[in-house]
Length: 178
Length: 178
DNA sequence: CTAAACGTTTAGTACGAACTAAACGTAGTA
DNA sequence: TACTACGTTTAGTTCGTACTAAACGTTTAG
Image 1: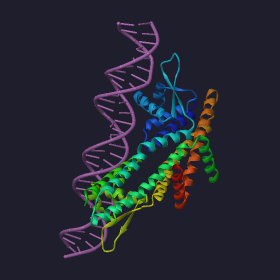
Image 2: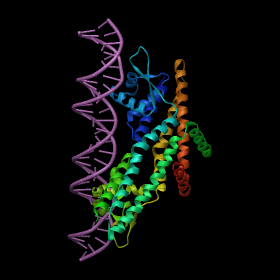
Image 3: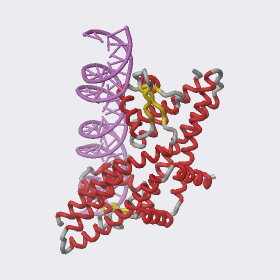
Image 4: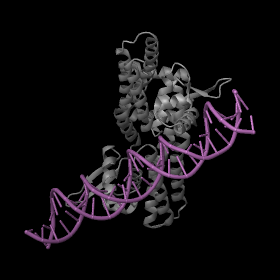
């Protein structure tokens, strides 16, 4: 294969690693997605081991993660025990899934935590100077809760937007820029 | 101090740790911000050591990081060698700063990486079956570059939005939800 | 000029997450 | 039945990062 092409693929794969790692996912996950994305045909697990240069176990784990995130699709061929993988190319869809994942996991947790703290203060029967402090806590916690509520609503809204509208929105912003 | 209040503060601080850690920042950073945020008066470094329960060095480092991110403000009192810290309470502003930080650092890098890979393929003079592959690479890379461009524009747009508009937008989304 | 009170920096450490190598389970095949 | 070809799981290792403890530099006070 032409050198430049191989080099380009490796550079791309490496870049994908960095991106996924930066966003809190395993580096191998990004690399594997990159390799699958730059494949005209679906790729087997062993081919991925070769392309990416990580162990079979790691590929297995990360490819399953990618599948769960809707970033790749497993494809079983009849009369072939191997699994083959294809890349999802609708990035807006992927972004939406990732956002959803995060929203459910740790985003809602943030909201809950603040809410719980707020409840604790509210249920305390403080008196004297403590009452003053309790009131202050309540104010602060309430303000943050309000922010998280808004943010959560915003994200939830984005998630429900369908592909077409997201594309339109993206194009809209793109036009503004140039 | 009333037990419930102390408990609420600790719960809140712990929650802030989780959030910052999840978003790729040190846990202590979140904890320290939480402690400052729940303080009616500005807090000294030693008080933070006491409140959060980490070493002085860690507080020093993280408080500086918080300052750089615009999440706390250092306040020097005359005739007092200690530094005192106040929490930024405008969360939209903070969110914008954080977004900006990320956009500049690794977001643009993602764009650059894909662009570079694209250039490599473009500059390759492939022939035969390689030409076909090169064309495929170009298509794929170009598609991803387009996505990142849009996303980057969108984020850049959000960053430039001022506080009022963001608040309005948030309220808007909030109303939709309920 | 020494001592104390700061915040910062550094060397060492602890911890968690992601990887490797290898054992494992399972389903087809000789 | 044994063997092979898979993907998965697990035990152990590695590695990066955030922490602690302590030395350090600097400024103020006695």
